[in-house]
Length: 296
Image (cartoon, helix red, strand yellow):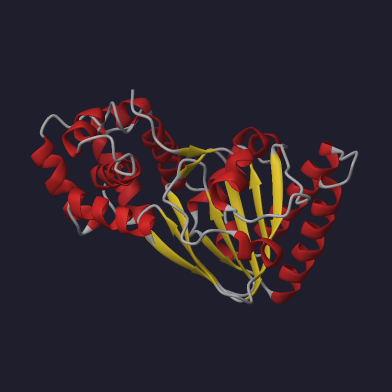
């Protein structure tokens, strides 16, 4: 069975934060919040590429940061929000010394409790970055500070925390023009397709499987995906698979051929060619760069 490096919310500090004082509080709740200004100096940047088992929001109120989300390197600036969906492959690449704001981590179960399916689709079908009017950004900062106060209090009331998070997400909905629009069929198909690919990319790499699961024709699926994300379904399936292989290449005990077979590629040479086409480097070159990063 393929073991991909997955990080839960409670893993966040242990994997990516060092030199923390012994009294720094550790949350073990389904919702977590970190003050970027207080914690960024303790985060080991860049973080290793990983696949979080939670959704998260990065809200920047000062300075900037860069986050890899799947194959894209995304810059986050003042009064912007980055949304990252559970299942994405991600890495924090840069944080400016003056960065301020919050990162909010929340599990899928929490998200499903506070948002409708249509709201979920809207939130994660638009571009990852949402530009906020300054007044909305200030409003969200106040709300996130309330959320932090409640979460870190001795007798935290999680119902209040969920309500605050829900209010924050509703404010985000009111901030972006794209989020105010209704959900069309293409966006819904694309959202469901991406969710399926994250679950089944190892076993199923053909468009036929996903079209059948979504009860649409292959041609219709192709049109929806191309219209929404600008790539064909096959390109997206390959991209997800190769991104996940980058996580497996971090395990230096496994050969590249082993990893190719674990990902259901019968021909390691084909896997190598596809890896280079998508990543721009060979699996060996990628692994060498990773090893150099570890030694620094």
